[in-house]
Image 1 (cartoon, rainbow, N blue to C red):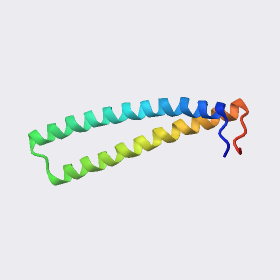
Image 2: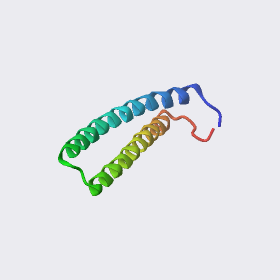
Image 3: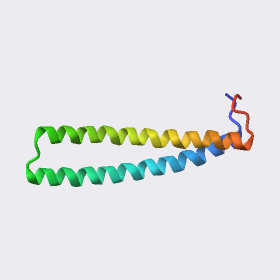
Image 4: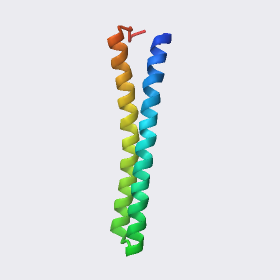
Length: 88
């Protein structure tokens, strides 16, 4: 695949905001998880509730993957609108 400078610029543009939103969503989810975990720890969290917390951590990873996919998908749409050849 030949890297056209315009294609690279578009990918970097959308990749950067996707990374920023990924970081923001991870920070918000981590703070929420920490607050809930501390609250449940004060109340005596059971094993079932801790398992739920681990499932939540798995969802955080999926959120990061989705943000990255959205960013690259929009970059591809941007290239199509600009008329750049996606095959080369």
